[in-house]
Length: 67
Image (cartoon, rainbow, N blue to C red):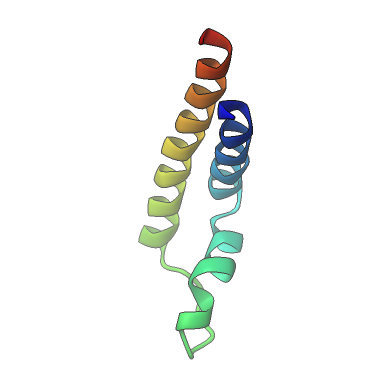
């Protein structure tokens, strides 16, 4: 169970780290009527969050093999 969740978190976290623009398009762009790019602060926030999500994914995968 932890392995599947860990892989999902790992994939989401890496996606957030690599391409915050894609994350913006999927999660936030529909809320905005103007065709704008995400701000630099938003991109930084998504990358930091992606780092934490990646760490949680790695932890869940490690926990699967530890227990």
